[in-house]
Length: 71
Image (cartoon, rainbow, N blue to C red; front, side):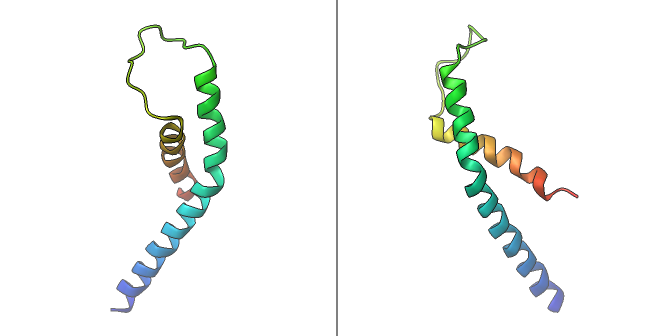
């Protein structure tokens, strides 16, 4: 029983750490998403549907942050 409590506590701690890192990294990814919008598109056949700049920034952050927990 103690192991399940420790495992739950650890998962909660990692979730909190993930959210803190996401909050700290989000402004950098937001700047990158804005820069991508300002730069001319390299792909002329790019689809018309795009996420908002904020959605793109969150997607970039969420995909990059798990690497901080590897190892």
